Image (spheres, rainbow, N blue to C red):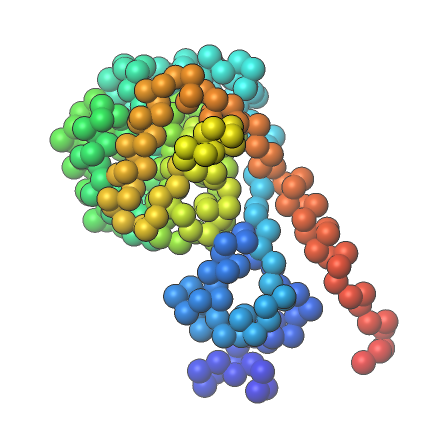
Amino acid sequence: VDGMEYWGNLSFLKAGVRWADHLSTVSPTYAREIRTVEHGMGFDGLLRARPDGLTGIVNGIDDAVWNPATDPALVAQYSVRRLHAKATNKAALQAELQLEARPGAPLFCVVSRLSTQKGLDLLLAALPRLLARGAQLAVLGTGERALEDGLRRAAHDHPGDVAVTIGYDEPLSHRMQGGADAILVPSRFEPCGLTQLYGLRYGTLPVVARVGGLADTVIDANEAALRDGVATGFQFSPVVADALAVAVERACDLFADPLAWQRVVKRAMTRDVGWSVAAGAYRDLYDRLPPPAPPGFT
């Protein structure tokens, strides 16, 4: 019972953390974060006491469902070898959402629960700088009333530049990934995240906070990464509105160089973000664990 005590109560989660042969979570960075007071939810000390007992393995996506080459929700299917068709999806999305038909405008999207944890308040604060660069924004999601209202006001105040759909529409989420140029994921914390993985798959470059699985799955388009051809998106830190705005401005600067942008898009689309990589990592982890005790052995 002593190993299960948690602030005067019993915690079966604590028992599992203490006595499991090994622990896994959904990204290496999140595995480090939950060892801190800020993110450990009272278990940080117990996790720090097991320095070799916790492994972070990034999730994968269903790349049969999320595949721009076969996605039935898209106006035009495309691939890294047929990338020009992505522009057709952008034009169709602008028309569907009543955004101005400006192919040269960088189109950012958000597909998310609308909450402060997801950083949508930061987006509202950074929005003037996004629009000042001639960019457009499309949002799909539902959540906190204050954020819904703020986004609705932004769409009302900037018709043709900002489109907001409150609710969730699975086919529209696919069309937004297929038609947008970049996807914003400014979460304050994110154990793994999926929308940035969908963005990589669809060549919709993620702009992400440098936290959790976002930090592990997106390679920032800094000068060295661009030179080495490994960049797949944009990271920002700290998780504040000004840093998000700077990342958006960096994305706009790269978008202004179509050849450089296309190189990053192609690199993003060739990343393997399916479950095969994660499954292999889990298999390797389980193979390293001690064998179970024989029946009746204690």
